Image (cartoon, rainbow, N blue to C red):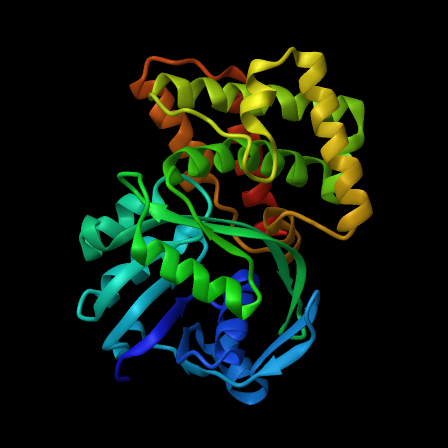
Length: 324
């Protein structure tokens, strides 16, 4: 395929939402998807429900090697699929690439394939769910943050964010993307663990005082890891992570419960993608997220006892659910 403006690698919920909005806005988009999902898209287009309701035809490729060139590559795969797929894109000419995956390994993986100068940092504070029907349920239009890894303002980050935002998926260019990526991970790690262990909607375990306490302790523990690696955390994102880490434990719990009440009012159906994956029998992103954080902690000589306890438990739940 000749050059496109946007290639979306991964047609799960967020990849589908982003691709559909860009295509509807008149951008030349191609989705890189697996065979079954690709067939759904070929037959019915990208079908968006929830905050937006529309069906959008879009080009789709099942073989990444068929992509010749793209101005922007957006990686929306699950992290455990990255190592196998990214090398297949080495032959493509990619001007800029960004990942909206979970975890902290993603930018290094992109740099190994495309060169660090082409890589932008990014995170998605946006939610959706891919239904069995093939429809993508758009549940929360938060923000996709994009920025240069060395920091500072960037014309290309501003241009890409502006295009996404104009298409209907909120996006902002930022000067401190690494701080935001770490802040998201500090929140995500705890939310992911609570989602699969309680199997509840997000607002429910955020409001409950017991699970809110566990979540606060997990966030603060990952915050210790960020501090040990010289990362300054931020309150910009799904949770005010910096405030949770520097306040008292009691105040941190109250902050999380407030977040839960807001989510209950605004997005009561919100479920973490990890819970969606667990219940669908899909592999969880355990090694590439929680496992990676523990390896970074070991390198820094830091003990993370709560994360060390939950990591093997979540890994066991993943194995048991997929054997069932």
